[in-house]
Image (cartoon, rainbow, N blue to C red; front, side, top):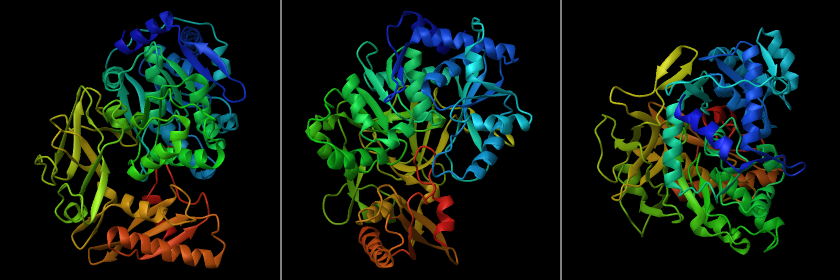
Amino acid sequence: MSRFTETMYANARRSTKGLTTGEPHAPVRHSWAEVHERARQVAGGLAAAGIGEGDAVAVLAGAPVEIAPTAQGIWMRGASATMVHQPTPRTDLVRWAEETTAVIDMIAAKAVVISDPFMAAAPVLAGLGMTVLTIEELLASDPIPPVDTGEDAVALMQLTSGSTGSPKAVQITHANIVANAEAMTVGCNFDVDKDVIVSWLPCFHDMGMTGYLTVPMYYGAELVKITPMDFLSDILLWPKLIDKYKGTMTAAPNFAYTLLAKRLRRQATPGQFDLSSLRWALSGAEQVDPLDVEDLCEAGAPFGLKPEAIIPAYGMAETTVAVSFSECGGGMVIDEVDADLLALLHRAVPATKGNTRRLVTLGQPLQGLELRVVDEDGAELPARGVGVIEVRGEPVTNGYTTVAGFIAAQNERGWYDTGDLGYLTEAGDVVVCGRLKDVIIMAGRNIYPTDIERAAGRVTGVRPGCAVAVRLDAGRSRETFAVAVECKDFSDDAQVRWIERQVAHEVFAEVDVRPRNVVVLAPGTIPKTPSGKLRRAHALSLVG
């Protein structure tokens, strides 16, 4: 039996910790032993349906109380789980149905496991010839013991949050999970006896499924898990749960902390929540904005939030979850560099005067991982040389399942090209500047969309996290860009014209280049991934 499954089952038997779900309306706690017993029932139902070693199973479910035993039951059968992306209020349902069908076909799913609130999709999937199993039916099955599973067996096929092209799924093995889980526990000084994890992250995202469900289940840690819709319907539910359960650990993308800061200021009174128990608030999945972190620390101070608890991090599905964490208890560390030299010479030269750019350091690679920065010819760069970040090590996937079959993720020396631009400091801390494919090159300068978006977001009336910079072809191999922002007053012509002018002004002040076009849109228009990251390529049609 793999170390992953053997350890998870053993911890389930002896752990006194458990999984709390159903907040805020009907909270219920299941011990990990109870989750394990329910997983044995799921395994029994899967076996009756012919699911066995090496099979792929797609899961379309929303409730963590059901997802946990379902995933574990799938692993008990030696099969792999793929969490299907769930539709959100901004999702085009026709497009979602097409993409979901394509994903199920791509992974050659032997069955689709489904539950509320997606039961309406069951007859559609069945009509396409797919074996559809409900979680309710599986949980009513007779329990069976697990099968033996090898270290190299695929446990998860994690759908990437890429913005273009055909779907692909990162193959995460049992060995990958163990390597990254053990590295993360060292990096965050995890104490299974004392730590309480609070998470609302979606289970179809790598951080939500692997980092904040699979890993706590593997160790038998105390976990409070709600859904993203619960969080979005009441942002303050997050601090409420941290207070109620004395949460010590949580995680979210940068945009969520921005929302939290605004809600704490506008809707909460000092002392309403006690956040002093929180020692680890990881910020990852998208670039960390230092201004947003500083704003959160200021807004959270009346509630006991400790600045040293904010932990910027770097990771991706291809490394299972995590690549690096900032030093535990160290808070955010800023690397301030000359913006012009960064753009023109691709060097991160420290500076405190003139045109500077403040970047967040993301710590050193976790154990079991190596990281290097290379130039366009593949030559390794010295400290502060800006290039493409590559990683290798035990947590790194071998490759992807795609419509064209298996595609390797590593080169012949085991390095994975992340597609991220960044550099290493003299101390070996990684700093990410942006995505290579998103960088706008004008007159030999690298302009990063995040800088443009941050500037646009400063304009009054622009919705937080709802500004996107889109690279445009200006002809003769030249590039330019446009900016789209969301505003609730999008139908007010005078307000729109004012926002257009102010966005152009703020962007010019930030990057010394004016956008070719500024577009003001209705709320919910700008396309985002299920985890809340901007889909810049999909936004191109909005600024044409």
